[in-house]
Length: 187
Image (cartoon, rainbow, N blue to C red; front, side, top):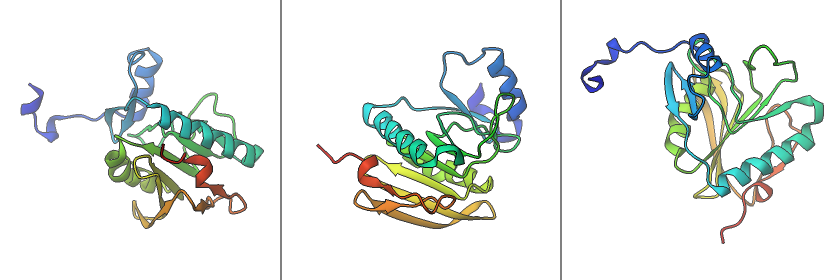
């Protein structure tokens, strides 16, 4: 019985093992991501969640052009034990036919039911990977938490912004993202 096993008896998956299992179709009907060696179920998306991702994709893709590749819910290969699939990631331009990107310039998670996991678990994961800019969009509060300045596996700066404000990604200081264009007003 699993509930009687101690953590010392659980062997985490390595990213290369996970990728092989994915290639074999083992998780074809499941929405999973690999976080610190564990398979973590991804929450289903509501209409607002999906719309915010579409808006971010449109805004960032148009503004960045060839300076960065905007990927939506696609894997990032972070270390030997993690392959999260953030809602939005801006990765360096490149050819990713044979491998997933290992770096990101900006990661954005859109959260409602996943807010605690995205704030506590994923923020540390992204900081440990030295991702300079992590935005956590809180759909319930219509606000964005911005995590910056990763130091020793943690973000040293966290700020909160409302939908009337604008943000500039660290890697693209010339780009201003008006949060009112991303977050619809409450109905």
